[in-house]
Image (cartoon, rainbow, N blue to C red):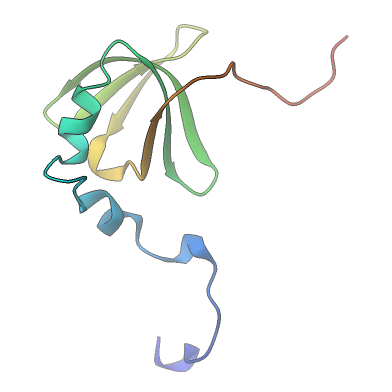
Length: 97
């Protein structure tokens, strides 16, 4: 990093793990995700890496997410940068035809 002094770095350059280790009040991301079990959520794990679906369970630091097509995703809660309840339908870019 010494040679990068004064260089503007993109937001994705910084370590997202340190963001996930921060707590929300006194809740860790694992405890916060547990409160959203059964709800439809949007999860962001980094630049260009987002998931949307229903949280099935949260056990031992692994969140199980099921999307609208029935695919299961297993996400490590330490890697989650943002977790929010979904209020709008998924929009998929593309042509209708």
